[in-house]
Length: 318
Image 1 (cartoon, rainbow, N blue to C red):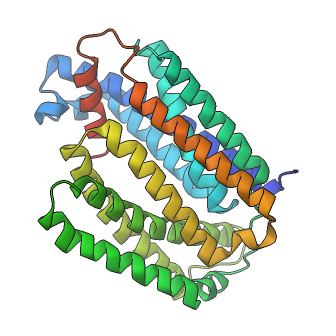
Image 2 (image 1 turned 180 degrees about the horizontal axis):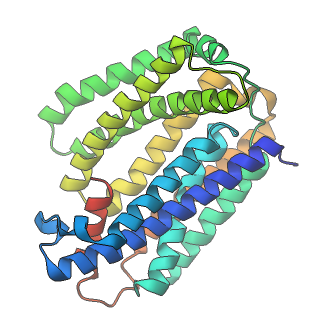
C-alpha cells in the first residue's frame, strides 16, 4: 500500500518527535545526575538541576519533540501519529544502553523489535488524511451527535473519577488517575489536531484565527493539558512508573483513536483487512511496550540505577 504525501510528512514528523523526546530523557537524566552530585537531588525535593545546562538542553530537546508531534497531526490521522509515540521508548532505551550503561536485556531488544514491527504495520495501512479546508469544517464534525455524545460521556466519566472514585478507593486509584488523563488526553488530541490544521491553513494564506472556534479549541487544549499534567503527576508520585507508563500509553492511545474514529470517520474509507492490520500493529506495539517496561531493569548492574531512574522520571513528568 502506497503512503500519501501528507501521511509521509506526518510519519516523518512523528518519528522525529519520538527521537527528540527519547533523546531528551537521556540528556535530562545526565543533567540530573550532575546536579545531584553538587546539590540536593530532584528525588529529594531539590532544584539544583535548574542551574545545570544539560538539563535545559534536555528540556529544549523535549519541546522540539512536542512541536514536531503537534505538527504531525496537521498532516496525518491520529491512528498513524499517536501509536508512533512508542518509538520514543526505543530511542531512550538504546541511548541509555550506550551512554548511561543501562544495559538492554534480550527481552528489551525483542520489545524494541516488536514496537518497530507494529509501527511499520500501522504506517503501511494507515487511512488517508481527510481534506479539511477550514476550521468551520472541523467544528461541524465536532458538533455532530456522535462526537457530542462521546465528549459528554468522557467529561462525565472523568468528573466521576475525579470527585468520587479517587476519594473512595485505594485499590483502583492508579487506574482512576490514568483514566482521567486518558479521557482528557483524547479530547486534547482532537483539539490539538484542530489547532494544527488551523496553523497549516493560516500559513498557506487562509487565516483561521479570525474564527472563534479556533480559540475555543486552543482553550480546550490548555484546560485538558493542565488536568492531564496534574493527574499524571499524582499517578507517578504514588505508583510504580513501570506500571503507570504502559497502562497510560495503552489507555490514552485507544481512547484517542476511538475519539478520532468517531469524529473524522477515518475507517469509512478502509476495508476490513486494512482495519484488522492496523489493530494488529497496535497490539504488537502494546506488547513491545509492556515487554520493554517490565524488563528494563534486568540488564542493569549499577547499584543505584533504580533510584537515579526514579529521580529522572519523576522530574520528566513534573
